[in-house]
Image (tube, rainbow, N blue to C red; front, side):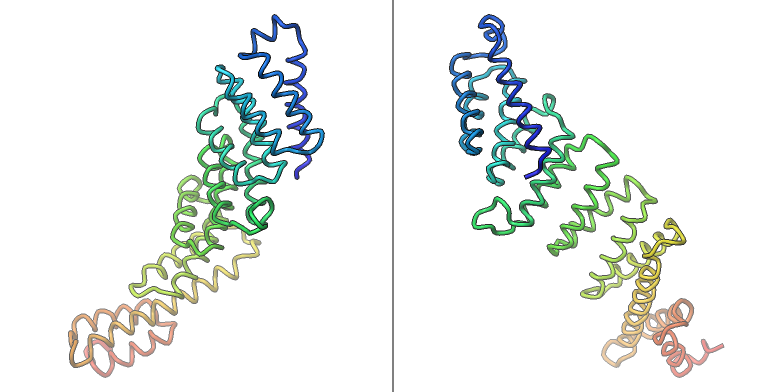
Length: 306
């Protein structure tokens, strides 16, 4: 468990204890159901001393439910969430943090919670704190979506969005990853990381399925844009050049296939085939498909050979 989280949590616990040790009059002004709250907080402290964090979390939850002050509720529900993490009850901790952000966002240290949620996402990816130690990458994705939704720092949000997209891609949620990369580019059009990652993902998708060539053309567009905005020393530039080359070859082959389709007897439409072949000769002359298109034009459409 993160030392930062433990230290912060212990400080919050100490603050609560100090408040309860003040005079009864002042305490009654700050706490509803003072006696019951004091008992629960003392019990929580005892459980923490014995490292029984799940039991401490239940005490804080009960203490929060005794309060009418939104600020006090937020404080105790926050302690509940942190104890659940310390007790490796990550699924329950996620639910607790999500409730906090939904209902008490104005009373929370958002930067600290974002960091704790990132750690929680790592736990799910590694299988720490989950049932039988099973990994749950989908839960990690859900956590990063929650982080982005409540991100207080726009610059950090870009990093978290890149992390989210990478996790989506890793779990084969390609369309969702594309959308996430596009959202980053919308926020920061000249970001080379998002451009490169999107180009690489589009190329991967195009290799699997690209009947209409949309993915190949998109990969070409993003790879070119990456080369425009990236540093001349960027180590990824050779891979971007390879993406351009691969997508270019594939798009040429696809267009040649369409041209040949319209030249066979049962689909014969020479004008459509001629258009494809001319485009191939013009835009793909440096590919095998372009060379073959030129040969077909010489044979089938000699008037175009000039």
